[in-house]
Amino acid sequence: MKLAALLVMLGIAYPSAVLAQDQGIAVTVGNIPASANQIVVVVDGKGSYRVAQSISPGITTTTMVVGVPTTDQTFTGYRVRVIATAGSGTFPSVVGGGKALGVPVGAGQLTLVNVGLTVPTLTPNSANPSAVRPGFSVTFSWTIHDSAQFVDGNNEMRMFSSDRTPPGSNVIGVQRFGSLISKVGDDYSYSISFSAPSTATTMYYQFGEAGYPFDDPTGSQAPFLVLPDVNVASPLLTLTVSGSVLLITSQPSSQMVTVGSTASMSVSASGGTPISYQWYVGASGNTAVPIAAATAASYTIPPLTSTTSYWVRVSNSLGTVDSHTATLTARAITGDFDGDGKSDITVFRPSSGIWYVLRSGSNFTGATGTQWGNSLDIPVPGDYDGDGRIDISVFRPSTGTWHILNSSTGGAVSIPWGNGADVAVPADYDGDGRTDVAVFRPSTGTWHILNSSTGMAVAVLWGNGADRPVAGDYDGDGRADVAVFRPSTGTWFVINSSTGAAASVQWGNGADVAVPGDYNGDGKTDVAVFRPSTGTWFILYSTTGTVVSMPWGNSADVPVPGDYDGDGRTDIAVFRPSTGTWFVVNSSNGTAVGVQWGNGADVPILKRP
Image (cartoon, rainbow, N blue to C red):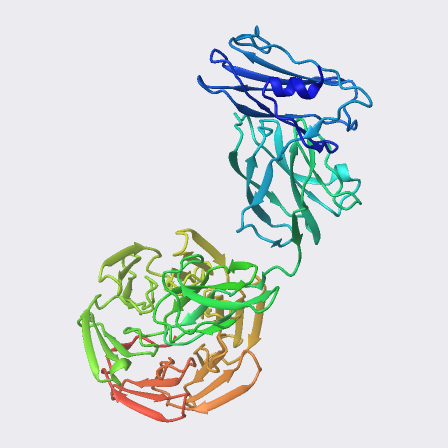
């Protein structure tokens, strides 16, 4: 009997086309006995290739696929067997009258043909990126449709790069699938993460059998989808690794900003254009507070009232990148008790321990009085809680204790730091926006600082018993520098906090009063003195070296420099005890202001030294 007749008798559909190289055989089996629970289709010849399929009771027809990898398109010497079984194991006994079909296929006889075999298909996730920046991680996901029960736990997905030779060395990522129970028609979803090469290249991803070589995608042959029993050509899937992918090249910077002042931040980015920007308030990645109309590469904040963080999201067609968080730390103006960015006219009255504040925010008309301290206390105002307002505070020499009234909460804080012979030198030495408790000890020339940011104590040997401490931010790095003025030589000695380097400048004489301040608004403390003998101020600008001299005051006046007009520059000012009058020259417009506030026994809190 001819093979065609046997196929018909056993319900095996006769194929109608020549089988292509490295494909396989799909066989429809009919007339399945009711007692069978498994159908096995086997192709024997140079090797044995088989597939077994469990069946449910009552199934009489099923289609099965056998992959037959070979270069012999005619399968010379091969035979097909179809077995229906009712037991377990590879080849249990034949039941229900079924029998093996073993018909040799010789040269010149019938040719085996494909009857509709469809290989597993790869469908990449539509959200997969088409490009990635060199050196950065990327994740791909895809779905495999198993049309022929070929996918198993020995399959894997590989990522490889075209810039590596030979082809076997270019695999940079592998995802194994583990054990699977595959059924015809099943879908499997997978993903793989890997780091892109550090240089621009084209990368590929393919599905295949673990241990099988992958074809070189840069060669003349298209890559193949390698299956356990079948090789099938598949489309080439590419990922471009390119330096044109969006990259932030310059981050927005954190800054110290004086309360009431504005500041600008900027970001630089490279990559495919157009590039868009959106600034936010808060920590990087928090999109809860977008800033309206802040859609440029730079952003200027409104006048700062408290420490605030910002960040920017940069976007183009390839995706988005979030900047670092830039924190603008509010730095209180000296003597600014109401947080409006201007120094307030304030005196401490030792006889009653009351602080009298004439607020600049109400154009020096709103007055407040707070009892804090006693007649032996020394006023040490500063922003100890970092809320952008000066806190009422005293240093009590009798106990070496600092008593602070926090403006943010109204809570009282007491800190033992120093002794009766120490000179209180409060300032922001660690640059965290809060005033640090600190003393200068003339007996040893040592500065003892308690950093508010860490709670760590720092001791710095700088100066001698005759020196006058003049802490200030002389290098403009946002941290107060340890510094002294030496009356015997009129020399200023400074340790720059930014570098640790020492600097000295001769400016003034032994009878002068040191009045350091930022008189030109460049963010750096300027060396300056007030000369009582002539009532003249001598200022040396830190940035330009320009010398400024201005007569303002008399020999009985007390110098009280501060930023009374809120323009970011220290104003020349004196307090006249004989009349209790403050005389201020506003740096913003050069106008003179006179305000009566206090009496001869009061201590102006901006007093120098």
